[in-house]
Image (tube, rainbow, N blue to C red; front, side, top):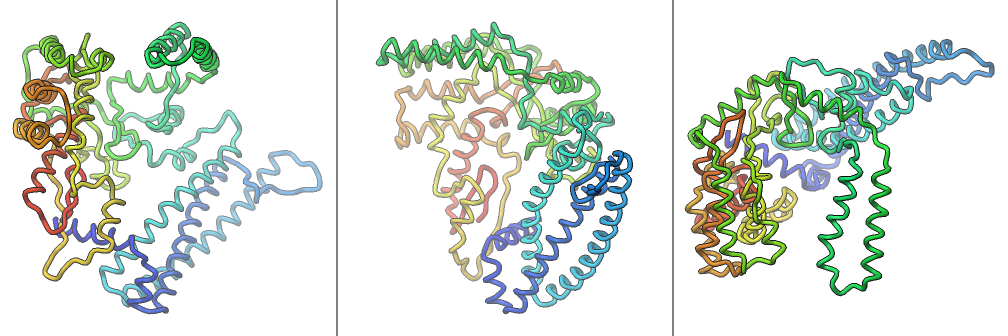
Length: 516
């Protein structure tokens, strides 16, 4: 498996170099021409496939695209125009099918020739390069065709099965037995990037704007009274404009009905912006399997009130080290337990699969609203400099920039590692001691919080995190929880320590992914 991962990584890495220059230098001008021709035909073939899909939709829905709109010198009924357009579309479909088959035949021959001229590895690199090139093109074509379809359809018939296949194919992943209606698919197709507006409570909205003004008032001590009044007037003006915006509420009702459906559950896609729908019993079974791991322990009572009191006392001890406004923000009141949920790792299963038996979930413990949430955010910001080192990177782009001019010596191999379940395997006591050593002995960051107080806050925010799931209360016995603001910081600090001791010739890591 590791060899396969390294092979895939190397393919992706090579695909980022100037591939045209490499082919020219390694295989010559004729091979370069062959590759460019393959690129060109592949793009044309894929474009024809998308054009065919667009034309089939038009034919099914009796839509008349611009090229098929008959230009007649006499007035005829729309029914006759549709019949003429259908004939034109059918002719165009036949032509495109013919061209598609010709391109496919030619492409097979050219790919076979390229495979014989290049090594197996370079051939795979070139294939990967073409696939990447197509991804951006496909997005462009889908966007263009979607816009065309929206213009061609009547205003009251914008939703159809064919339309959603174009628009929502990569957004909605339905693994449940529940058949989504046209309206439900349309509402979900906006994905998690879209905020469905709720009905405006004008009284609450006005109170929110007033609260906002009160929050910024302490920062305006050097501003004249006239300017303060002007700012308040502008805030109220914005409020009035916002409160009068007319918004449709149909989508909100549809989503609410789906959320309240006891037989299904709507999940966030683990990587990407899609929505995953699972049968409730299947989701519960997967979550219970995760919770029954030895990292979690079931409790007989909810310790939220006890934890809130402990955090309050710990914060009172460090009050002199915090700004008054910061202290009020961190001080918890009316806390609630963390909530457990799973995100669907659809990137781990075959494309377009609807079998959820092998669909894994990533366990997330949401800390929002807990007694330690705001304190965890504060500590994560304070400690974030400790999570960086010469080995850490922020993205693939950073790694490519670092490695592009590097020559790997003979007898060395490039290997990738993935730390299994890093967050739940981070040793908390050890990591807290690491942090305290770097803060108070090595002076890597500055803080007026005393060592014992910082240790107490870190332990409260990470040790024995409790959460609710299906009415039961659990604690996480060790490791840091996914969903805690301190999670990525603790994981990175722990990884920085490990890599500083190993000191490989070349090593870079992004959270739990390492290449060396």
